[in-house]
Structure formats: structure tokens, C-alpha cells
Image (tube, rainbow, N blue to C red; front, side):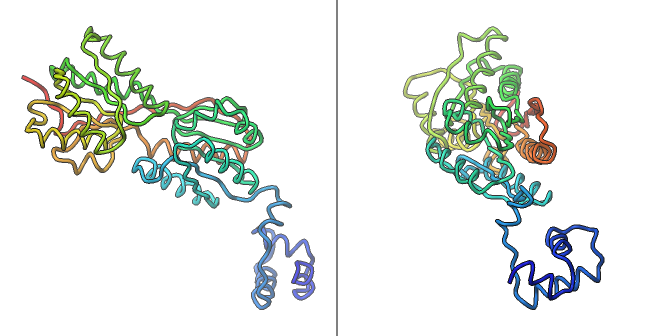
Amino acid sequence: MTIYDIAKKAGVSITTVSRVLNGKEDVSKKTRQKVETVMLENNYMPSFIARSLVADVTKTIGVVVMDVRIPHYANTAYVAEQELSGAGYHVILCNTGNNAENVRNYVQDLVVKRVDGIMFVSSTFNMMQERPEILALLAETPVVIANGELPIPSACSVLVDDARGTELAVQHLFEGGHRDIVHVKSVDKESARIKQFGYRSAMEQRGIEGRAYLLDTDYGIKGGRDVVGRLLEDGRVFSAIICDEDLTAIGVLKQLADTGIQVPGDVAVVGYNNSEYAEIASPTLTSVDGKGNDCSKLSAQLLCGLIEKRNHFPPLYIQPELVVRESSRTKS
């Protein structure tokens, strides 16, 4: 059965049926019920693809994350989905891993599906700057990248000042009497490098850049445990550790405890993202709140604005805050 058959059975014009299908308000309640009854009686299912081609909209948005298993990304994706679905969009969630080919394939699939826009979550996707074939695919699609940037006219950004976030952590520890502060990077992405920059800058501003020490490790509890083992094996003097992710900081806490090192009595520990892990850790974990929920919600709202108005917006910046808990202290 086609739209023409529906119109004939309902005794209305094809235009009226089309308005009912598209949810237009300029159709009387009686006429709408008549058309809907005919469709129901005949099990009529309108073609989503055909309707989207006519209207040039699909009411569908792609949300692309690196690894949905990471709590920060999972929560960001959830907030984005809630915001976008509330605005009347369906969401396709893509989980790329740290793989450029997967990113290209997902972008191509989303463009072929004619999504109205794409939201990328994380500065990980800055890697697309080095992939002109991906940027070419995105040239006509409204794009928002949460905490990242892309050099194409169709893209806008919501950025967290991660350098400032790490500076807040160093300031807090410095005011507590700490000077031998270690910084740990456990995720290879642009925001992690920005956090390192903020750490170096904060140490230099306080005249203790000579005591700065940076370590790279794997993400997660094992990576955090390894950091403590390496510091002790090297005989490194340290009184505080800042990690770029909460879960890595939890690994640091666990290994310090297993080694008999007291937190915060001997060593202070600070994480990043203010996740639920920070609240349930023992001791509870001081963490930088990167305002992930705000970043995700604002990114979704910005994308809706891009789709509906096709306007370009300058980067929007979010300022992080430090949430102080038991794992850091003020020295006497």
C-alpha cells in the first residue's frame, strides 16, 4: 500500500496524508484520526528513507566515542543521547577504539546514512586533522567535537580547559606543602598532553620545575600500580602523584596501600574527571572535575543549533574545578 492508496481510502488528498505522516499541526483532529485509522487497519509503515529524502532530514545523529567502556566516555555518551533524544533525534552510537581506520569507516557509514549531524566525544578525534579523507567526508555534515577541534567549516567545538584543571591540582598540592609532585599520563590523546602542559606550567610558575617528573603508563588500575612500582624501583623522591584519569589514580592508591605507604600521610594522590570511582575509593580520591556532563550537554545543544540554523559558532570553553577529598591533605 502506498500513500496514494491511503489518501483514496481516507477520502483526503495526498498532501493531507503527507502532513499527518510528518506531524504537521495544520490538520484537524478528525481528519488526522481518519488517516491514522486507515494506516492502522492496513498495517501501513511509511518508508523512513523515502521520507528523509523528501524532507532532507533524517532526525538521526551519530555519537562517536573511542571506548564506551571508559566510564567518562560512557557517561558523556549517555548525557548526549538524553539531550538529543529530548530534542527529537534518534542516536546511533559508534565505538571506534583507538583506530583511525575504524573512525573513517564509521564516519563513512554515518554520512551514507544521511545523519543530520555527528558528535565526536574526546580530543582523541583530533587525529582526524591528519586524515584529509575523513575531513572530506565530513565537509557537508554539521559536526561538534566535545573537547577537541577540527579544521573544517562544518565543525564547532566545546573545550574543557584541561591545562587549568591540572594547574588547580598542582596549586592545591603546593599550598599543602608538596614540592616533589609527579604527573602521570595514561591515555594518549590531545587533552592528556594539554594536562601535561598545565602541570609543567604550574610547576614552573612556583619555581619547582626542577622537581617536575612525568611518567607515561597504561590506562587503568594496572597502569596506576605500575607507576608506583617504577617510582620505588628508581628510588624517586615523591610526595604527591597527579593522574590524568581517575581509574589510573585508583591503581596508584591500591599499590601505595599494598606497599605500606599511607595516603595522604606519606603521599597525596589526585585524579581527573571526578568520576564515581573517586567517591567510592578508599581513601576517597581528590579529583579535577572536568565538567563532562556540562560539556556533553552543551555539545549536543550546539549540534542541534548547527543542524537547524546552519550557523557556525566559535569554540566554547568550560572551566574545571577541583574536588578535594581524603587522598590529599594540607601538611602542617
